[in-house]
Length: 281
Image (cartoon, rainbow, N blue to C red):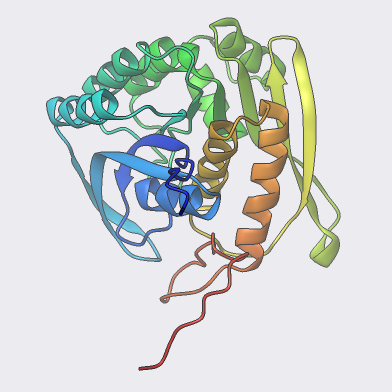
């Protein structure tokens, strides 16, 4: 008799983010990373970008009520193993998502709110930065940001422009964020031997530093690839420190096999480990 047992269901990840027509960042990038790493992505769109491989020219905000309706409908139907929150386009969206994820405190939340493709990287609005810090950062399992993004966010709670990386990270972990992954924290060497590093922090300070070979690029979507992969590894039950190491290795592979689709930047190839064979008819 044939075995009728259903195959195991892929871990489900719900991602909130902008729709990128290039597919290099936002929810399109997340869905590709999730699929490449054995997860299934559910998506709620926060905004629509107009852009190509060189730049983003404009964006359109999605109404927060639509966002809530779509997310709640999915969550009433399915059980997710992780959340990822990317770029948001309004404070109302931030408040709505914070309320939604608060109902699932045991589900890992990856917060990667700054998008380098945007002209201001999403850093122009002080009120948005404060909203992120006050209502989403405290619920985050891992917050990803660069040193520039950290310094800009820190301006919402301290005076002066001094370099206070450790103190700024401690402010975020002290608010409840479990881990902060600070990108491009160091550089060594040049040319083919150039190295870069990312640093993971918890409430006690540095947990680990991860080195990687610097690639010349230029790339678009490296950060989205990293956070999408991190969400996938956490959804599969990896410990955060191991998930970060695995996500960085995955991102390095995607960048090493990046493709140039147009006249702009290189797009990470998230399926670099897969070989597809077409069939001729």
